[in-house]
Amino acid sequence: MSGKTITASSVFLSITLSAQVHADFLSDSKATLGMRNFYFNNDNRDGVAAPSKTEEWAQGFMLDFKSGYTDGMVGFGVDGLGLLGVTLDSGKGRHVGSSMMPSDSDNRAVDEWSRLGLTGKVKMSKTELRYGTLIPKLPILVANDGRVLPQTFEGVQITSSELNSLTLTGGRIEHAIGRGSSDQTGLAVTGGTRESNQFDFAGGDWKVTKDLTAQYYYAGLDNYYTQHFLGLIHTLAISDNQSLKTDLRYFKTDSSGANSSGTSGYRMSGYTKDGSGEIDNRTWSAALIYTLGGHAITAGYQSVSDGSNFTQLSQGSLVD
Image (cartoon, rainbow, N blue to C red):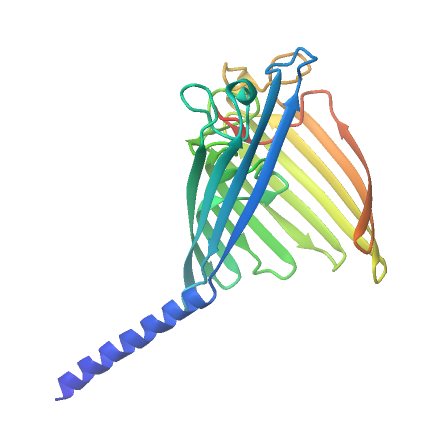
């Protein structure tokens, strides 16, 4: 009798814990559906630019699911991002050079395109690790959301806020999917035709006071460049509905690996001082944003060195 009682209790305890885990996982979950209607017109018919004209119209659907975490010291969860684009209007003569939707074998816009991104996540205390589809928004890497569907990246990212007033972030990106694509590709800079699959980054945001935040980030794209970023953000409260925000930024970007040696395929396009395609850039900027209620006025200044164009992560063979 004793053995049977223990077995029954064990089964009951297992069912109870399992139900609690699923309850925490599901009760904190949420899903949102976003829709975006996008018309794009790029008309170069009076100039020498090619293509002469791009004109298209599409509808986008974005289903974003975010789960809760399982109960316990270490919580586990999974997020899902479903993206669908539907072509409403296009044409072979107006689709050339498009960055909004994919092309079929006849170089016409496809009727629709889609992709699914999954992200596993693990959380312990105030530290979270995410692996899979990422849409980063960092000074050294921002996913491009300027078309009907956003650009996404594949990799791992860890974010920790264990230390008071300090948020640390680091990770590695290995692939990307363009705004107008369902296909995964490697990484590069604009103009680069040989892909890299290693973009490492690390840095942090330190809230010095409630009104002042200092930032430092490092990024490196294998065989292309290394980059250091310094930022300072201060908000001065003038009254309950008025404020003045100061945003200072500095980027130091240098060539690395194959780009330093001038290896074919690893060169950047656009301006470089000697035409070599080697990355060498210093960029700093200052912005003042005056806010009154729901309105804001911005004044800014930016200085770019003459070594090369400003550079950040793009994609290999795909338009970003």
